[in-house]
Every structure is written in C-alpha cells, then in structure tokens.
Length: 425
Ligand SMILES: *Cc1c(COP(=O)(O)O)cnc(C)c1O
Image 1 (cartoon, rainbow, N blue to C red):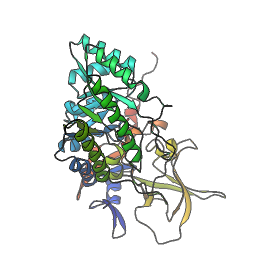
Image 2 (cartoon, rainbow, N blue to C red):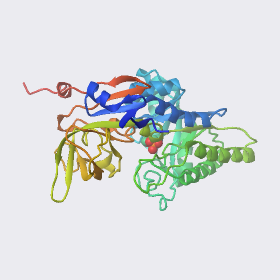
Image 3 (cartoon, rainbow, N blue to C red):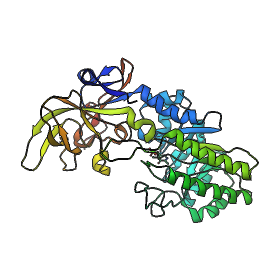
C-alpha cells in the first residue's frame, strides 16, 4: 500500500495533509513517510532472516541523517561512495563495521579515514587502487579488507536500463581480468582478500540480469577457491527498480521473490560444491529502499499558456530534482487537491534559467496559480542530487510518522550559500 493517498480529496503523507506541511514548512519540500521506509527495508531484512546476510543501504540515494538513523536502528549496514558519506554514517550512529566503501576514485585521505574507522570492506575497482590501499594500510600498520568489484558484462540487449555492468564503462574489473587482479590483491602484504562484489546497474525491473551476474560471480568464486583464494562474502550490489507510474511501465520484481530466487541458487551451489557451507551475502539497495517513500511538494507560481505548449511554472526546479533533465526520467505529478474543472496539458517547469529545467512534460492537470503539486516517487536521487544553481537554497525535508511531522533538514538560507566565499582584498 502506498503511504501517500487521497483522504477527503487531499493528498496525504500517512495521516498528514500535504497542504498543512506546505503551510508550515514552505515549498518546495521533500516529504518522506517513515512507515514506507521501514517497510521497504523490512522487505529485504525479512527475506534475509536466519541467514548470514547484510543489507547495506546505498546511501547516495538519500543520505539524510534521520533516514540513516532509522535504517541503522533496523540493523542496516551502509554502502558509501565517499569519506563524507562515512562521516554521515557515524554522525547518525550507524556502524562503520557494517559499512562498505564503493567507488572508482577513493583518495588517500578517504582510505585513511575508512581504515581508521574500521569499515567492513573496501570494494576495489582497479589495480592501481589496490596498490594505493595497500600502501595506505601499510603506513598505518593495518590490513585493509578488500572485495573486488567485478564487471560481469551481463548482456544488456534485453535490459536497456543496465548501465554499469558492461565492458564499456568505468566501473569494476573486467570479468576476464578478475582472476589476475585477485592474484595481485592476494600478493599484497597489507590487504585481506575477503569478498567479491558487483553492481550491474539501476532501475532493473527484472531480476534475470542479476541472477545472471550471480552465476558469473559463483563461477569466479569456485575458480579462486581452486587457487587457494577463499572468499567470505558475496555482494550482489543493488539495482532493483521501482514503479514510477508511467503508463505502460512494467511492475518491478518483488524484493522477496528476487531474494528467494537468489538464495535458492546460492544454497544449491553451496550444497553441491561446498558441503552446505554458507557464504555471507551482501546487498546494496538504494532506490528500492527510498524512492517510493518520498514526494516533492511544490507550488504553482504561474500558468503560462502558449500556442504550442502550456507551461505550469512551479517553485521546484532542476536544482531540487535533477532526474528528469539528467536521465529524461518520467516522474508522476499529482494535484495535491484535485479540482473538478477541465484538464489542460502542461509542461511542468521550474524557474531556473535553462530549457532543461523541467520536471514533467505533457501532463493533463487541472490547476490554478497557488495550487500545490506533488512530484511522486522522489525519495531516491532527489535531494542528494540537489544543487544551489541560480543561488537557490535547497528544499526542506520532513519525515511524517503517523500524524507527526518532523523537520529533518531546514530549508537553506541564501546567505548560507555564499558564506564560504570571499572577495579579493
Ligand atoms: C548506486 C549504487 C548502488 C545502489 O543502486 P540502486 O539502483 O539505487 O539500488 C549500489 N551499489 C553501488 C556500488 C552503487 O554505486
């Protein structure tokens, strides 16, 4: 069930009417449902019950401290892509020991920080990174736990959304080079080779490519084992998609069905080749944990009818929500208090000085100046991608819990935006 629903003709987040939030906190504001967040996490967590498994939320999807805290309290680990994200985990009371560090460009400072805090694992993406990490760990008198991000080169033809699991991108170690890279890692004195990982792409609606990637990782784990390199964990990455609600979109696979199939394969393989001995399984979901937990509430500033197009100009813009212009992403837009009148077709655009500043195109809406709209399914890659372009302060963020509203990030004040700047003396 969605936690955003119409009650008496007004869109609510759980039990709170969105106009009430707009009045109290202004617009644009990101509104998240705590119940939706906990349910999404529980879908993973419950499917992992009784297993040696860890759900490491990919926090780049939404890294608000309150979200990190709520998930940490449910037992989540975290997948980070920067030292800054690690500091967020710690600030929110998350456990560095359940944190894995992904990304192609980790700096010496980031490696030091992560080693100092005792993270679970570095997901290493290249040979030069192995050497850097080995040196940094050696200089600190430590050993760094490493996993190699392997690029399984899963066929993308039938799965157009796979963007990171192919040979022609910057991520991971090519499948054909993996063995050699593992040997290199195993030979370095300050590294502990503990795992294997992959992340083949995002917004996958079908789990077939993920299971295909799993098959390739399994193959590699067996080959490594025969060479005396024994891995403790297998990390299949994130990538499960969500329903953005566009017409004709197919619904995404359910988390529990995907995990069920994945564990069944792993169990069969362990039973056949490893005497039933388990292997720790790690997941890195981002979007599927937070996307449908949030909406972006925005107010109509002006209506601008035109010969070819009608524009609905709102107070949220590409700097608040970049997905439409960055990925040509389709996001649902709903009237917060729908009017009875005739609908007109609008492009919903922001005030930023770019033609690319649009949130939705060709939507039938019955709106008037001053009305509220909600951009749906905006909880992932919304606020975390926001910028200050046009010296616009970033939106406020609130979390709704039943009939309670918690402000979890204040709206940015324009003076804050240039506080770090200075003029020539
Ligand atoms: C972004 C990212 C994820 C999360 O992807 P989703 O599609 O949001 O689930 C997981 N792992 C890595 C390495 C990532 O970069």
